[in-house]
Image (cartoon, rainbow, N blue to C red):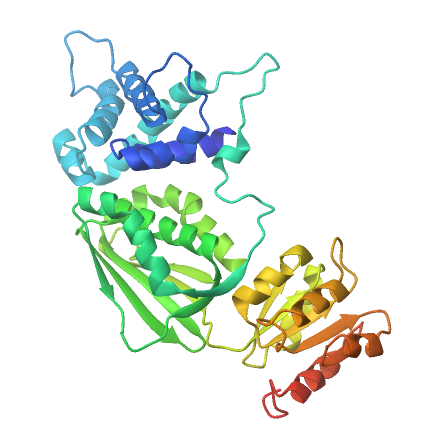
Length: 408
């Protein structure tokens, strides 16, 4: 684990120091080597190390002089994270401005981080620090996305149920403002969508000041919009800017990989007010074309060709996941490559045609090999020879009835 990652995770962990569930499952906790002679849980170990490190920052002056500048770091850490004082109350307690508190708070965290880093990740004999990367990655880089039709309301309820203890312990109220008449089906990867929602609510729980969080659903053009709104103070807008990189930007990055957009609408720095996190997801009510091709550039080409249509283009580059994805997604049409590793397009075509759940889905085979007759004999509705032009693709889709000449 590098130092920057450790700093980011520690700042997040401090906010959950007495939340046993969050503490136990936190990425930093998971990354630690727990001594074999420690009898408690992993979360108890990291809490003990943090409280000990805070005490070690206590100046050795006798008698204690809390008004002295050298006591400032210890007081801020102890009263903020051990006693649970809010930032405004802490500023009043120390008789300093909130701006000064932000500066002193940042320096105190740096001092604590350095002490803990040296304790928890001492250099090895080779001079390299311990780096269990798999323990701190929420989703591995080679994660295979599996977009399927999901009930957003059901996913949201599942996430809120898991967060129930946190909501009750913090005495929060989550208000769901969801029109009952609409259908909230989205195209998304279930694992990634849940992770993004966890990130959104984790961010909201930490920054909120009014104990009320509003969740709104709406339909915007061809997307479904989920908005999480909460009140924040000017202090937290500034003091928690470092958390955006770890939580919001990470969620935004993974959202982009499944055609979702996450936007943060915040008050101006120095102004209290309403913050909104808006997650836009593709609606599952649109016709979907599934592209099965191991070349990611092909998917981008098809998306560009069909950008002026109402079709939603979803791609998978792992042919071993093709059958399961087709069953889950139920696309309006499939564009199927032939030359792929492990499983070729002909095997996938035969499997889809022999399955009662998928045998009615139109399939267009796409290949650099001239195999039109074979494709049609195996049940494809059309064959396109690579390289495929936009005109060829639009004409083939017109023949299936998915688009009309005017819509193209």
